Length: 262
Image 1 (cartoon, rainbow, N blue to C red):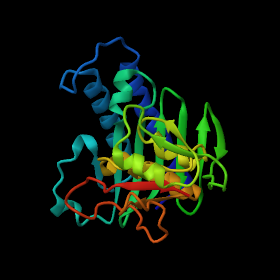
Image 2 (image 1 turned 30 degrees about the vertical axis):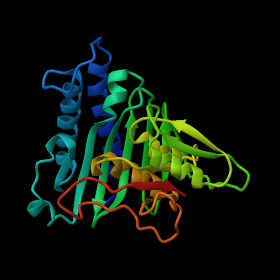
Image 3 (image 1 turned 45 degrees about the horizontal axis):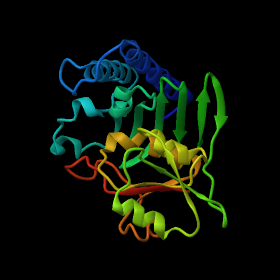
Image 4 (image 1 turned 90 degrees about the horizontal axis):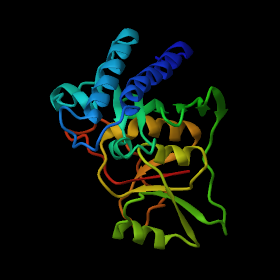
């Protein structure tokens, strides 16, 4: 299913979609709501159309994208393999112009993300993961293998979180960890990628996300040697028997709460 030619074509496709977004991002615009005329929607749809056309040129698998999510469960439930796409992840980051938004493209096989590309156009960073083969990060053309970093006793826990607010549930989770904690702020699916490259130990997500928000980055995390597991109890997030996050298993595309770790 996956070969070097296909992998490179998807990486190139994420960059092409990023160029479409940057054409709009670099224009001056006021902060709009996500309405039909907004620059955000324009960028979202430009990237979506670019990705869908590109995927159809190299694959006959079905595609589930945030911008074409009205596919019935009756149809989706028969899919064995499919492409899962978020053409512009990090809408707040796009509007704030802080650069922390991404293009996400994942290949899902039997509910498992087996390949993912996460591209941050402003930062010129691309994360690529092929489960069973490894993960790497491309920065300005330089390719470097990545892997998560286990927490060592006495180290400060580096926890990925939100700049805007910390919920009581997150506070409780932080308090359950032995030792000191340090918050590492980041937007979009780059939160998961921070764990994949060892820049943070944990990313607990105790808020709503959709499957297209996480699929590509989960593939990167798991290819790098980390894991993304469902949080059953926020007071015991590191339990060894936690189930992995899976895809296209139900009508709703909303994820349960989850933890990214190694």
